[in-house]
Amino acid sequence: MNYISSLRCIECRTEYQAAPGVYTCPSCGPLQGILDVVYDYQKIKEDYNVQTLEASPDHSMFRYLPFLPVNPESPRPHLRIGWTPLYRPSGLARAFGFNNLYIKDDGQNPTASLKDRASAIAAIRAVEEGMTTIACSSTGNAASSLAGNAAAMGLTTFIFVPGRAPQGKIAQLLIFGANVISVQGSYNDAFRLSAEAIERWGWYNRNAAINPYLIEGKKTVSMEIAEQLHWKVPDWVAVSVGDGCTIAGVWKGFTDLYRVGWIDKLPKLLGVQSSGCSPLVDSFLENRPWRPTGENTIADSIAVGVPRNPEKALRAVRESEGTMVAVSDQDILDAMRLLGRTSGIFGEPAGVAGLAGLRYLAGNGVIGSDETIVAIVTGNGLKDVHNAIAAAGEPIRIGPSMQLLVKELSWRGLD
Ligand SMILES: *Cc1c(COP(=O)(O)O)cnc(C)c1O
Ligand SMILES: [Zn+2]
Image 1: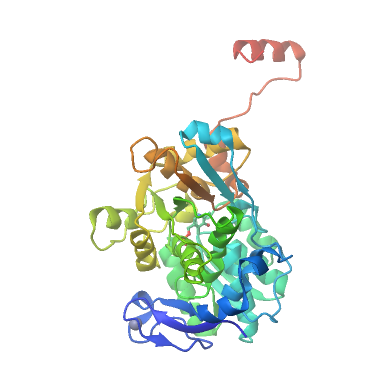
Image 2: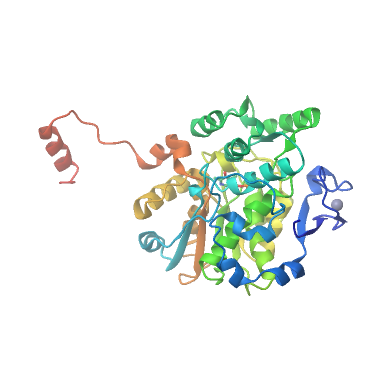
């Protein structure tokens, strides 16, 4: 069995026994009553230590199995999820003026985003609970990762996406055999419709904030960062924020490791949104409750005007003594281009927003130039080539002639 001891409401702190169908706190309701998964940390400490973990031949997120809300014997997707590389690109570090800057490239997951870590858990738990159909609404990556992981497990999926989801992500859904419902409306509209459909047909619910187990998958990104840095926790971890589940998961990963004593400090979190859609940044900086906003950003994965996990996200940043910033779409495109040309890493707009936030803060004293910083690239740029070309510009177009090439390169000073 797994090591879960209870589910605790983040609002009223009541603890519940984990059971199929228990997703949110009945007394606080599905909006406020988000549950946190609590483990028997003492028991984990008795059964595992850093050495047993480091000796694990499992190079995927499942090397952290005792910290995951699944039974060890349960079937899993055969895909290699997690254990993504942690790079230290020196050209990027120079460009930013940070001496210890790392990139965790989570675009290298099977469906090319960090969301695979959560969707794998959703697919495993659906099978554990005897379900055959999973549904979710998503700005794109939760959907494509769910479709991929469900395909790997032989499950049926119904996916609700807002009309603006980029083609690359829609293509993934269709290739993975999902039933794709493209809702002509906002993400909020897609979310509401999916919730009603899940209720009506009794499907397994992968909607991230509602389902408390998904953050448990996402937290493995932090466990990997800690292990890859030989348990020396970075000073800062920068990540983009939409619903808020990812940053809450990042925090959970570090706090779980802290609880079992495998790390002796916690990082500060930098949460980044686009200034065209920054309900949580505004709430954090103005120290007031969040309010719904428009969704005016090219970073579709974080274009979330009505975040579903606001409290967990804001608490994570506050508890970490970190901060939040909003960056413009232009800053995001600049970060995409800069990351690509200095390091060979290709992120989607939301994937590099954390990095754009770091760049925004560089030199203003919030982050020291010698501090150790990890920026998580949460999704791969091939998902959204339209914005990539907007970031990087067009190719040099010429006829098939050497003369023209010589002229063109000389005119551009490239010869
Ligand atoms: C979903 C997503 C995020 C943000 O995660 P939230 O849980 O919505 O805050 C960031 N980047 C990418 C690429 C994503 O797909
Ligand atoms: Zn409650």
